[in-house]
Image (cartoon, rainbow, N blue to C red; front, side, top):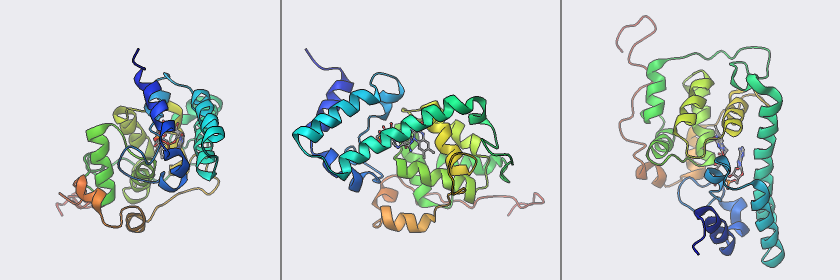
Length: 236
Ligand SMILES: Cc1cc2nc3c(=O)[nH]c(=O)nc-3n(C[C@H](O)[C@H](O)[C@H](O)COP(=O)(O)OP(=O)(O)OC[C@H]3O[C@@H](n4cnc5c(N)ncnc54)[C@H](O)[C@@H]3O)c2cc1C
């Protein structure tokens, strides 16, 4: 009898050697094997973190245990953390000021929001990630961090609109992981270091040095300035 797709994926992943190099590859932007891709099945409940950990431990006993195999466990702990975070903070998960006492200084600019959603911002790496999300329903963890940082820090947008857009687009949408990570990056969540602003050009040099990902997803096409009108509503 054929295995269900999720069982097949679990088996294929641990039959390959990908788990042994996960820590080195996990920040990839494109492709199947740089990260586990368990998230769509975790989010719809057809597999549990325990089932994955059980296969992971089998791999560690029979094949190899190293920093990378530990790191898969560590990332699943982040998921666990956000589940309990959501459970504990309840409606605060969706509030502008999150679990903090003061509101961020960001706002809502419809034009900027639309450009971010479509992948037409002045930032090629962000555009590529957004186009990938729109075409596939998936975006890497590194990509999610970059587009969220851009949303909050470069576009000065209210983080909740970004979280809501991802809620609509992601095939692995999970209420706790999505809204919890957005809060974390917007500086209104659990991150003790506060605002996480990524230097997008530096991140491009590290994670897409030959700009292959950007080219593949057309991130450098149709670059547009952030605003078409100035603060007194004159066309720029
Ligand atoms: C702004 C933002 C929004 C996100 N929204 C979601 C979401 O809606 N649903 C979702 O499942 N994940 C979300 N994540 C977390 C993470 O990006 C995805 O879980 C991961 O990219 C899924 O791919 P993977 O299964 O190959 O991950 P891997 O790198 O292989 O990680 C293994 C598993 O660990 C868990 N995990 C890894 N990183 C995180 C993290 N930062 N937070 C919580 N769990 C994590 C996931 O369950 C994942 O399947 C978000 C992250 C950010 C920064």
